[in-house]
Amino acid sequence: MIPLLFIRHGPTVWNAEGRIQGQTDIELSDAGRAEVSTWSLPAEFRDYQWIASPLSRAMETVKLLGASNVQVEPRLTEMNWGTWEGHTLAELRSANGVDMAENEARGLDFWPPQGESPRMVQLRLQDWVGDVREAGHAVIAVTHKGVIRAALALATGWDMAEKSIHRLKWNRAHLFGLSGNGKLSLERHNIRLVQQ
Image 1 (cartoon, rainbow, N blue to C red):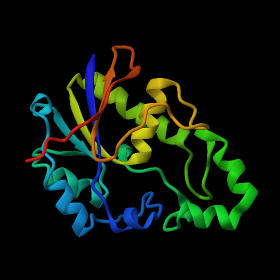
Image 2: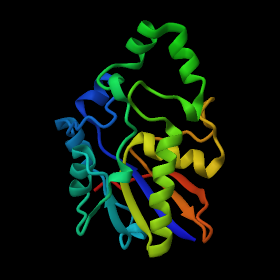
Image 3: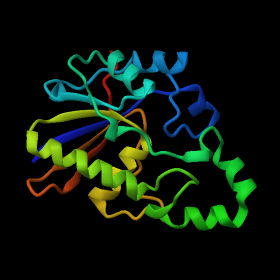
């Protein structure tokens, strides 16, 4: 079993405003930098290989965590929300009414205009997981909420149409296991990032 530890990037101004970032390259806010500066990786994970999404908020987070020799991995980029990036869910629900509700009810096949579905995120994540399995090294992936949710769905069979029974906190780490046949399993979630 190969361990994969997922950490979401620190907060941004758009996070604070409830705006969908998707692949828009938003940097950490001052408050986000301050928060991540208090995080420290638990000792059991310190020998893992660091891998990060190329977006600024993930790269800043990985640097603030003190990582070295970070591999940049485009397949860990956030879900593309297309024309909906920069909007809040409340705005989208108000503007799109029943169409939005029907789209959200599709779960893994929810699809923003000119964007990608969570199922499409799963496909690129599975491609990356295959490379991790071949390399055989334990990794820390500093990535995004949509990618971690896609991993959770792969590991648990969650279809995203309803709320997951696993409540993930976004200032914590989440440990998955990768079996020899490429199957993900959720091992532990909401692991505290030790305060310095």
